Image (tube, rainbow, N blue to C red):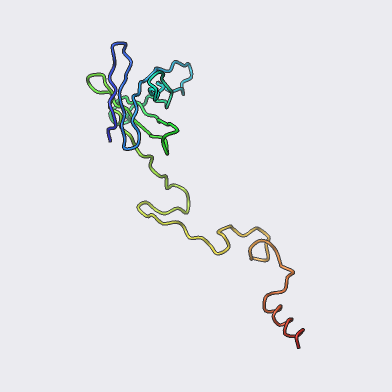
Length: 164
């Protein structure tokens, strides 16, 4: 879903506005210069509330599509006013501007014992807490060993005998 557009100003800096139901900000892209190949391509800067300074709110990395080879920017915007960070992708348009799209991360279901694709259920939980039995264990109980306390039936019978 498109949440904004960034256009290059006279200085060549991409500036624009992103707006969601809970967040609105004027943002700009600042090129990030580094020799580290894993460094982001751009810092995402937001205009502060007093409109006097720029504040870093995210970073973008450059990727290319496996299918089309199209180059795009992908990263995250975060701010204390947000409940959760916003994952965004920016796609360059023919006029040099960027369309800003947000995306919701997909849940991974690759762990063993998890629900199969399309199901929204949890795996079964064993009565013993789902923990595997310890090697060499002969008790088979909760793993705490044998109790020295009398069972509830034994206590009741002992009390009846003592009262009589």
